[in-house]
Image 1: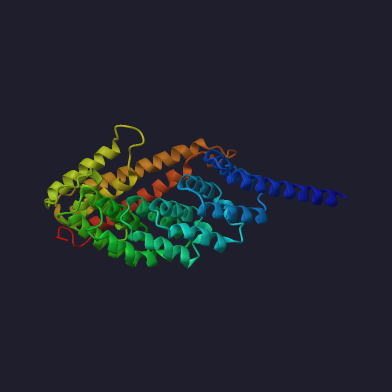
Image 2: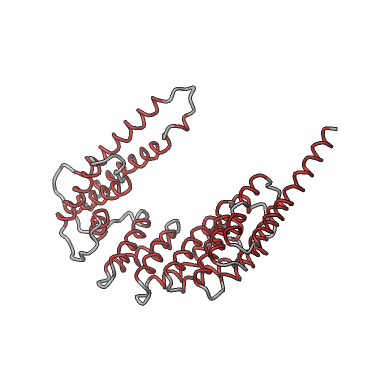
Length: 381
């Protein structure tokens, strides 16, 4: 008896949900844009209330049809629905049909429409990433000189990479070629260069990117925006390169102090002075929350490299900084851990973040000690 009642309730809910869907579809065909926008905005709520695979799949197809035949103002709101309902996309069995509808807009002559199509592909990357057609469509948009279109292509690529890491090797050649093309506007080149930082997990690509970034930074006619983007990507791939050189330490000192206009080579003492100045400013920040742990670690290991090559003093400043960071991280973690009683849920306290800081600080001590004790101490790198 109970089972029959539940089945009847489920059937009633399904019927009501589809009636609601048909009503929203009708409102989406309204002659006024305001009514259409209001109707489109109701779809996420409908998905949350009735996450039936059949209804979700049908609704997304209807949104795909609407996306093809609507003005850009409404396409923008449809793309937002896909962003808000990404978790429901996994329930649709019509991803290929939905993608065909989006690709119609992606290959149109309207650059703003193409931008919105790229945004939608990025928002629906959970189901679109496996399709070569989606990857190819995004790849073609990198040939554009429209800054918004390139930015949308970068956004779509970043989203696709979460579900299809192999796409990095596909897009690499195109992006690296466009980023190095000086005829491309500097703002577009900067976006492209920043997007290359996702090559960091691949040791082979990160080493290639390392060389390209060094070239862009040292290029005399490079714009400040391009140099800053190159240093940002260079920072992302510097970790695999443990053999830091004099020029690496110089670039790091420029990056952390945001001095990108000077291309004059600096002496070792000048580099060390800049690194020490930055580290001291970070260890005693003027305001709470201004501490940059990553750059401080990078500056400390760079200082250790400079000291190992050029310094004859017995006392090492890099070792003192590394030791201070490790002790501070240990005290912060111990203090917070003691606040959590055995019966409380530790998830409310930021213990994970402090634990990561502690691990990184200990690694910094080990790396600093390893650099300072190298047999090639005081030899030029």
